[in-house]
Length: 356
Image (cartoon, rainbow, N blue to C red; front, side, top):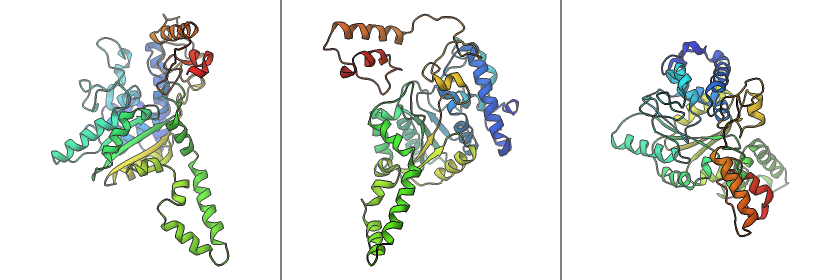
């Protein structure tokens, strides 16, 4: 299947029943290619089906897909005809590890920093309105990037829109390493929304059985804006911000993803599609150690071990210095940017939990 993808929108020619096969071929290609060049492996293995669904529903480069941070766009690059350039990934003269407008008309926004995609998408939507153009805009943001304040400023502004704008929340429970904080906890609750739905139905059923007052009580609760809805409907945080919430959706079921994305495309106003994915999916070493395979050097496919021992990274050195500072300076406190391991603070957190 993969050899049939040579230019944008070729994926639309592939029969729906063959798409899971294509997804596995893409994973095999990514593992094989990045084992030689290094790169962002775990995050890309997690968004293969999501990217396929996006490219099935939208027409590039007319429609705009904006990737937050951007290191999860490898499948996007493959589906837009850049597979043969992966030998030069992240090398001088080769393709970038991030979306780059100079590289392809299908790359709508040069990314690299976290939490920017919703703001960028909002800009595209406003430009579309001012120029009376007709195209769709989709911003893909991870659960780690969603902890950034810039994302909430953008969602707050997006709530005023009267035209379609789709935000896809790629929720893999971790950005580089496992997320921490209130938003992470909130999203964790949404992942179990089937339990909330069952609870809602159970409450209504039980109340209706109360002799005399049951049906009236249920009707009264339904009419109350802040009643059961606040407790049992997933995504109320986003709904209360003015966004239509759809999800959670299995991020590895192409048929479900395609259906929900097509539905989101028809809304008049901002829509948030909550997609649950698994970082490192399809490659056991990356699933066991997703932080290690967030940005990896060349590695042995069989074991996942580095081909050769690399020099310490900036994060390694920062981690060592912070731990030593913690020993010497009792007043030093570390604040994580949502994930402790990816920011080099895991050792500090383990040794000085009260100061983390």
